[in-house]
Length: 308
Image (tube, rainbow, N blue to C red; front, side, top):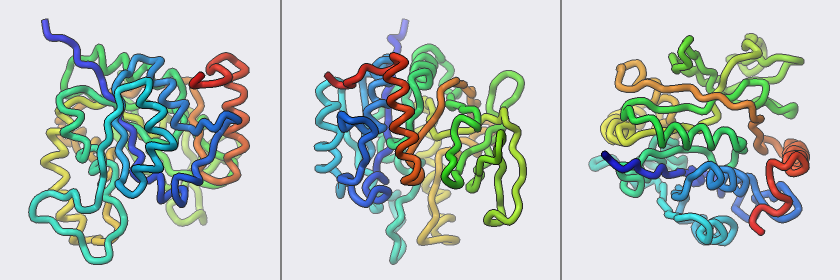
């Protein structure tokens, strides 16, 4: 009998420095200096993950290790991967003036050699996903043996919105068996009373989204076959993307998954969680996030001090 491979947690953090204007600006969300990523890692270790891969940029390496990595490497197996603009397929060169990274598919591809043949979860560094999400993804990766079945962590849309502006979310079409049919990237979603709506004309008009809609927050469970596929598809997409939009083209994980679904190369199980997502999309979100963390501690979800 084949030994089950221990899943890897892959945390995409290469954009952290640019989003926060340097890692020094990463805001603690409790009085002990913990940031959102601390709670994700705490939840992941509690769910069973033992191996963590951080995808970062060389430019933030020292700060990242000082702020996060060195602390975590005492309690888990930590590896680093670097997502850089020049990590490109043979024969492709960086367009003049390009500074933007190549997207989340490229980030995962940069980690291919470190992940190897192990199943893996991929997620954003600066989103709070909740303990149930990590447990569900870990259990899926341990127990689902079909190499072409992946998982997506789905959230109820009303659990992912902010009162302080619009957000981008992948709105999922899910069939009666809980499998992903399609995912629609909506870049401008707002809260409207007790439901959500999206706009495609900069807020002039809005289209209602069903209040029980499931959305993706970019938390995936993948198998080795996903790496095999993007090894081939990314260079092809990149070539076309550079031709049409040399300075801004990016290849995102939902697009890679959509393509595999349409080509019948994979199926995706949508896992659901009752947890609320949160993150600091706007500076006005920070007090809400801190209050949420405080309440979670009061409710016994987390200890007062995470890493005592």
